[in-house]
Image (cartoon, rainbow, N blue to C red; front, side, top):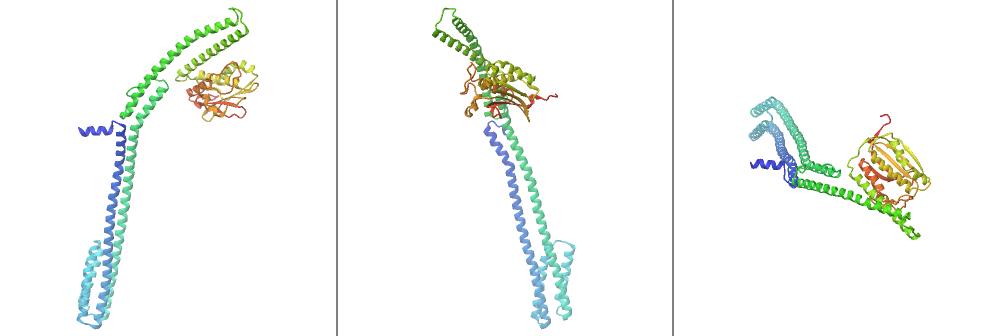
Length: 485
C-alpha cells in the first residue's frame, strides 16, 4: 500500500517543488546509469589491457629466452665437436634441457592448432635426437641438424609473433565492440532523459497553459473559467482558484461600472439639457435684456455645457467600445466604406480648403464595419482638424505580404517624437491646437488603437514621403479578399 502511494505521489506530486525535484531525480537516473556503465566498461578494458600487456611481455621474453638458449646450444655443441670433453657435453645437455622446458611453456601459451602442435612435437624430437647423438655425429651431420633446429625455432618465433598479433586484433575488436555498446547505451539513455524532461516540462506547462487560457478568457470578457480547470501542482491549483475569484470580482466591478455609467449618463443628460435650454433662453433674451457682460457669461456657459455634453457622449461611446469583446465580421466594400466616411467630413474639409486623395487597392474586406468606420472617422477627423489649412489629406489602403495597411496622412504641423508614443493612450492630448471649434478630449487615437487591437492589428505613427503626419493601421491579411473572389 505504501509503495502504491509512493508511486502515485511520484506521478502526481503535490507541490511544484516536489515536481521539480522529482523531475531532476528522474532525469539524473539515466545519466547516473550511463556514468556507471562507462566506469564499468573502462575498468574492464583497463584490466584486459593490463592482462594482455603482461601476457605479451611474458611471451616476448619466452621467445627471447628460446633464441638465447638456441645460441647457447649451438655454441656448446660446436665447442664439444672441437674439444670433446665431458664438461662441454654436460653443458650442452643442460642447455638442451633448459630449452625443452622453455619450449614446453611457449607451446602451452600458443593456441591449440594442428600446425602449432606438430611444430612443437617435431621440434622436441629434433632436440631429443640432438641431445642423444651430438656426441657421435661428425661435423657435417651436426651442422645440418643444428640448421634444422634453428629453422624450427625461427618458425616457432613466427608463430609466437602471429599469436601476439591475433591477441592485439582481438583486443582492438573488444574495445571497438565496447565503444559501440556504450554509444548505443548513450543514445538510448539520452533519449530516455529527454523523454523524462519532456514529461516533467509537460506536467508544468499544461497547467501554466490552462492558466494562460484563463487569463485570456478574463481579458476577453469570456465565460468565467471553471474552478478546477487547472490541475497539476498545489501552487498552480491555488493560483487557478485565485484567478477564478479574481474573475468573479472583475465581473462584479464591470457590472457595477456599467450600472454607474448608465445611471450617470441618464442623470447627466437631463440637467445638461436643462442647462443648454436655459442658456438658449438667456441668449435669446426671452427672460429680459442682457448687457454685453452678461451676454459674454451666457456664451461661456453655453459653450461649457456643449463641451460637457460632447465629453459625456464620447465617454459613453468609449465605454461601449470597451464592452465589445469580439468583432462582428462581414464582407464590406472597402472603397465605398472609405467614401462614405469621407463624405461625412466633406463640409469640414471644404471649410478648411483641404483636398483628400484616396488610393484603395483592396476591393473587399472581411472585417467589422463598425470598428473600421470608427477608425476612419477618428483618423479623418484628426487629419482635417490638425492639418494645415489648404493642405492635403491622403488615405491609402493596400496589402504588403501578409499584412493589410491603412495609412491616413495629412500635411501640417508634425507630432513631436517624444509625444508620438503617448498619443494612443486614453486622455493623452498633444500640444498642437485643433483648427475647428471643438476641443480635443484625448480619446480619438486611443479609440483607434483599441479598434485596431480588436481587429488583431495595431496602430503606429510612421514617416510619410509627402505628409508631415501619418497614422498607420496594420491588420492581418486574412481580412482581405482578392478582386476575383
